[in-house]
Image (cartoon, rainbow, N blue to C red; front, side, top):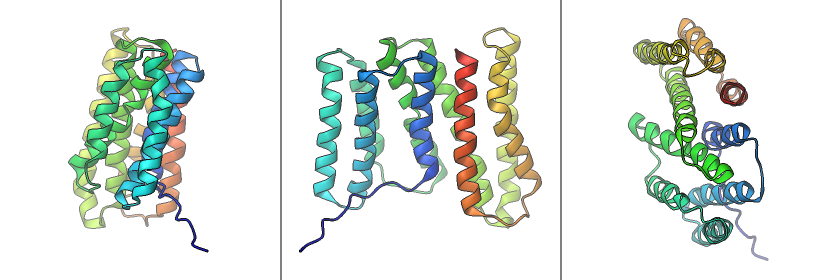
Length: 239
């Protein structure tokens, strides 16, 4: 009997976090999880796994998963008339067609694309594409861009880490000043500072111990934990 090949599933913890944490923050701020958002989540997951199958040239699984993604998304257009999701889908398709590369610019582009799940989920839950959708995208994007820079610094050869540390320090210093300025202007409450505090503290501590041995599994799972913590704190800050 011929064994049926299983579909390829993305193994990167960070990428799953970039996909799901922004989605969760949007639903948390909206205070809603219903059939619409469940269908969007299903469509998003099917599409994400389909890309992994496509990269592995598993054409049958790719076609099946894309069909499942479309089937889950159709009611969002036909029943609820959420037509702006077409734009989100188009951006996702363009980014998914790009080859997977380790170049920093490509990774930054992928990060910005993955966190579009935040405004997409907000729009689906509330029917609005407004300032909150933008802020959800921006804050999630800035957090995960910072996480990407930090991980690249930690994974780099020891001789290259010293140069990357200034990029990491500069990014988080600029991020902290930007958030502080908005808090001081009463655009957001001080809770937004608390949402970014763990990531800023981690980055500062990481820069101070660049010569320490790297434990990749610990780094990966700590990123997951920090991402979930950020999501919870961001919801508390924006609700």
